[in-house]
Structures are given as C-alpha cells and as structure tokens.
Image (cartoon, rainbow, N blue to C red; front, top):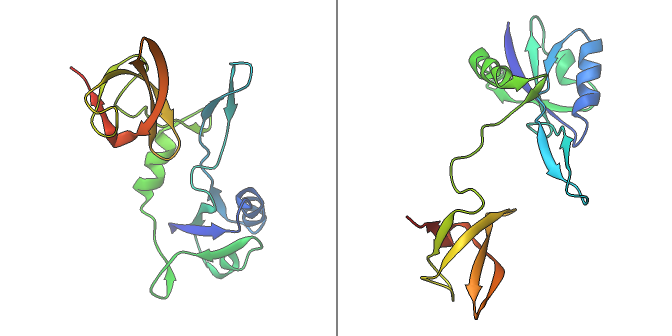
Length: 163
C-alpha cells in the first residue's frame, strides 16, 4: 500500500477525487488558504488547489481502475507502475493544515515599510520604502523623487534591505 500521484484534466481535480472515491480509492487533494484583497479593501479567503491538476491516491490493491477513472489523465509512473510518493511527504502537507486548509509559512524577507536600496536601473543607489510584491517577481517601492513620493515597480533582485 502506498500513495501515488494522479494527474487530472485542468480544473477537474474535485471531479476526479469524487469519482476515485466512488471507485473505492482514498484520495487527498490539499487546498491552500489564501487571503486576497477585494475592491473594498477587505480580504476574501480563497481555497485554490495546492497542486493544480494533481491529487494523491492511496493504492491498496490494483491501480488500473484509478488510471482509467474519468478526469484522470495519468498516474505518474516509475518503470512499469505508479511512482510511490513517500508517506512522509503527504504527512508533512497534512501537518500544515489548519481547519482542512494548508497554510504556507510567510516567506522571510521584506515587510511593507522596510527601507531598501535600489541596486540596478535608473534609480540605482537611491533609498526607498518597500511597499509590496507583485506577480512575476516584481516589487513595489516608494521613492522620493523631485520633492514628491512615487510608487515604482522594480525587479525583485534590483533591491536589497538597507541596514
């Protein structure tokens, strides 16, 4: 008996989980707790899948039924059978759950209001205040330019903490 990983059709993880359950398989589909800002400034909780298009399947006997279950694209394989996912990996993910949702630790690093130094680009050498993170490894900094403050978006590696 072991955990295996099933790849599902895009956005069909829950449907595959349901059908695998009907076929007698125990499954685990970890979901993430995310707080997203809304237009009114409030934060809304979303629950996306931790690993999009993947879920864990407990293989107790045969695995062919799981492989051919609707919405399952394939089981990740190693040789002639499904790849064994160490139980410790699944246990570690479950240990991070709070009320059924995985909570990832906050990454160490800058917090809004921290002083940073710009390392590259036209503002190289200027001091700024860290304002936040954007998608695709971009940071927002508040720079004092020509007597006023401007919000500027820079590459993540273009700033460092100013001590």
